[in-house]
Image (cartoon, rainbow, N blue to C red; front, side, top):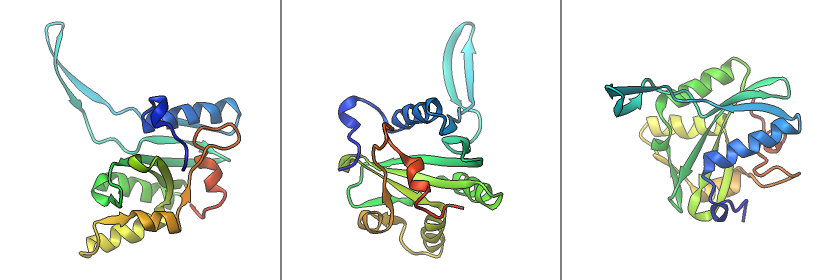
Amino acid sequence: MAVSYANRGMSFEHLIERTNQQYFMKGIATIQKVATPWKVIRKGKQIVSAFPEKKSTVDFIGIYNGRAIAFDAKSTRERTRFPLSNIEEHQFNFLKQWKNNSGISFLLIDFTKKQEVYFLTLSELEKWWNEAEKGGRKSIPYEWFVENCNLVKSKNGILLDYLGVIEKCKTS
């Protein structure tokens, strides 16, 4: 089993934020959570509503090893598949454009019920995305992740060492 963070009360994104703090403190990388801009509606001083002002890009952006890095973190409670509908088209397009401009793009996929996180390269995602657009599968089987992706683990004092996986993958 990969990193067990469920018992520590951490959400997946919070775990990544803690990991990013560890990377920063060790001088490995500078990666920040991208804030979603919110529009707040007030009646006097009272907040009556709030909603995202515009579509966000991806969850995290930064610099690693002299290269720009952008990725999104996705969770699924499904045991047997990851639904591609969890990824917004504008996020996919952003990651693709980032990669086309020599950045590193990928997704971290959290299978919540299995307590496993997988590193999905943009190249592999593109294959599944394009196939789905042609009428093929609308999800990626869990077994495919097990056989084809790197499981992200705690390593070298880092909670979720996803940057260690970059060294194993061809993400550029």
